[in-house]
Image 1 (tube, one colour):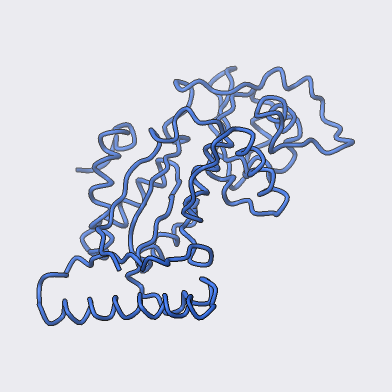
Image 2 (cartoon, helix red, strand yellow):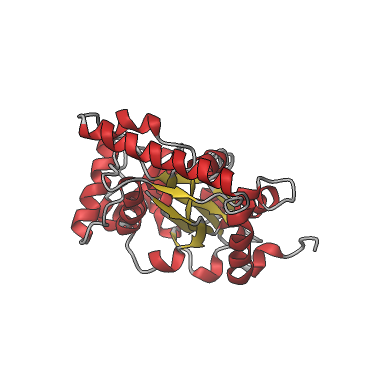
Length: 295
């Protein structure tokens, strides 16, 4: 058994320069605690496999920002998982969303045709046969430059290392996307890792009780695996303080809401322990999201 500290960090610099498929693969690797696929072809094959199996949550970890004329922006009004910025005057508008959101959006065949031709040889997108849309309208679609993307459309990925108890609270933020270390598939033959609670070190008797229980759970888990149980069968004996790693992906407005909730004085102290330092990272990296906030 190993005791570790919780943490949270922005990982966009780590993902910068990766293709969309490599980015998705890198994030999904967290679920299985495996190395990322080494080549673009292997990453594309992995993404095609996800689509064939219907395992689409990982496709939420790559967001596309498109500039398009008003006549097309109108088609996206009311889409739940796409962000729309209406054009000013006769200029173009911006539509943003994850790969999965565009795949599942209604009546956007012309945009799918554009993406199929422009993103990694159509790894994700296909246009239904017999679609009656006028694909000449694709001439008005292009990818947005960084300066054209409103801050409200920007998404940020964060790696969080915390206890299972805290992760249960985080995944309640429904507008976010999550990929989490899976106790179904990850096998802890070398013993489990646990998160040291904030109160550890305050009382020797209580500390000993907690440590003994963590060691007991780790030992029982290893015994059950040795007796032939699979990780998903043996995981029931793991404690709430077991370490988990997750990638959390959300828009800047959603992150602002998360910090308002999770950094409040009434929030769980274990949650504030990771969210207050993370908020400082966001304040340094994305000052635009804090404009107009009361101090």
